[in-house]
Image (cartoon, rainbow, N blue to C red; front, side):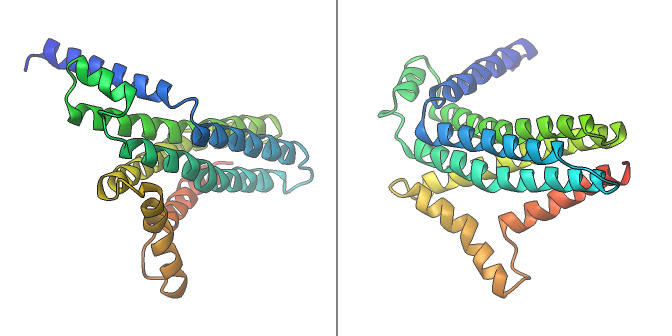
Length: 223
């Protein structure tokens, strides 16, 4: 494949991702996730604005951390559950997929595009409110080096979480087309519950909790 052919294919698939992303904007799960994301941002922005005293910076860092946890496992979960349901739909039954098939896209491209759209939706719903809270924290007295260090950390974390949840949603839809959301909950919550009794057992929330702590700790050292 020539460079121009590869670029054209990439552009077509990016357009397909945007199409599925737009198609899910009015879904109930995504609207609920957006509403909750706004609520998390508003509540923590108020909390950050009210911080006072010598420990203000540490409190701001803690609020940003807590907000990211809430965004991850409520907002991210709502978006991922909606994605699992959408991914489980047969292409022939889904209007956007049927239209894409008529335009010559293979089913493999549709699956990649739908997974890519799910990844972007989770990443935005988690990352954008968190970045806005970093700006609020900066306005309330946190240092510029902290904000500069935390911003890419938030982007990396939100992107990794979005990809992980989208892949799990895809796997759940492929393995259990009738009950993709139930399987997704089992895949995420099952290992977490087991890890409460056996801490050596890894779980997705545990892995991302450790990743988040390490990423934000780097910014805290620069404050």
